[in-house]
Amino acid sequence: METVKPMVVAPKGNKFRRTFAKVLNIHKLTGVAPEEEMKKTKFDPENVKLSQSFYKLEEEYERALTLEALLAKLFATVSSIKAAYAQLQHSQSPYDAIGIQKADNLVVSELKTLSELKQCFLKKQIDPNPERTLVLAEIQELRSLLKTYEVMGKKLESQYKLKDSETLFLREKLEDLTKQNKLTEKRLNQSGQLCNPLENLHLSALNPTHFVAYLQHTVKSTRGFVKLMIEQMKLAKWDISMAVNSIQPGVFYYKQDHKCFAFEHFVSNVMFEAFHLPRFSTSKSFRKEKQSKTEEKQSRTEEREVFFERFTELRSMKAKDYLKARPKSRFARFCRIKFLQLIHPKMEEAFFGHLHLRNQVSAGEFPETSLCSGFLEMAKRVWLLHCLAMSFEREAEIFRVPKGCRFSEVYMRSVAEEALEEVEPRVAFTVVPGFKIGKTSIQCEVYLSDGGGHQG
Image 1 (cartoon, rainbow, N blue to C red):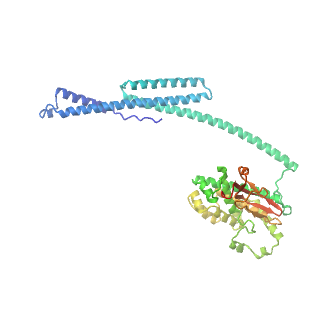
Image 2 (image 1 turned 90 degrees about the horizontal axis):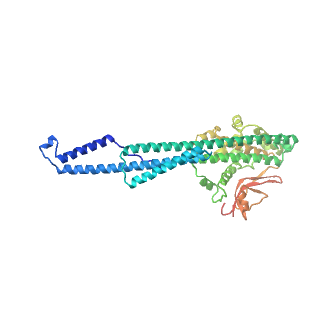
Image 3 (image 1 turned 135 degrees about the vertical axis):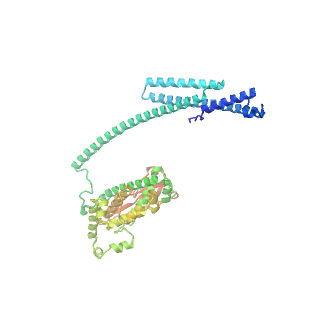
């Protein structure tokens, strides 16, 4: 409830007006006029009209001031009831009998005051000192407001303590679970039941299981980058739905969270483009620049060894360190090209307000930002997956499922379980491409929609 601001009262001016009115009245009754006017006239009808008009204005002013004082007191009383009710609620949890009793008494007292104000209004009882009432009402309302804020502060403080204790409990529980997981992992390692398939890996022992294991790491890093990109879009006040619709128009999403799969589809398409080519690029200039006579004469076995060496070398280093050590390497060029394809100039300007980042990346420098760090981690994973794919005796093939195809569990895995309940779900778009290594097929991840064809 808003506070009724009291009218500015000037007691001295009011007193002056009353005195002036009395003087006019005396002059009217006695016929006494100022010495300068004595010679002109003893009685002027215009003075009588002026006096009557003045008294009328004075009465209206007094009535307005009295009514304003009554309203101010009414609002102040309501504020007091509100503060008392807030205190009453706060005292119930945790239970405080004394606090409840005080708050209850205050509510009853203020309700009586409201009743008295009503009677005063109905009986037209005039406040003898409305100026003083206005000031007191404002003080009362401010005190009530302060008391309400104090109660709210105590309530928030108690909620904070409760959340803090819950956080502490969950943190302790997490630590216990982490310790249990480490002990379990240690026991499994000692028994030989658990090991990282990529540790101590040799080219001769390479099989599709290693590729699947590293593909999982790649998908995880891709989703991490997509999450960072969406967060930047939200900070830039982008319309996420409009952006999603521009990537895959007309797709029905079972949940709002599922829209992130459209961005993942876009990122995967860019990052895995030309994955099946040894140079990982469709650029003719890239091929001419990078191909040499020595490479052309290499046998398939030698080529496998080269790719596996690249995999081993980069895997043991951070992407940032590798780029600093080899700024003109194929991986460095791959990172520059893919970043500029993913982050459009308009997108960069919306995110950061300038194009400095683009210029830095073009020059071979990736700044220390969360977006760049997430991209480099993803780019490293994709590049290493490509090196691993080219290390097999039979190169890994990549495939995507066209829009509108029927769902097949042999070659596909749905990222949205809700779609599997449909009678005949169809593919809206491929989220993560699938792979084929020899006779082994690795499922692609797809987003399904009802009826697929017309909805994307």
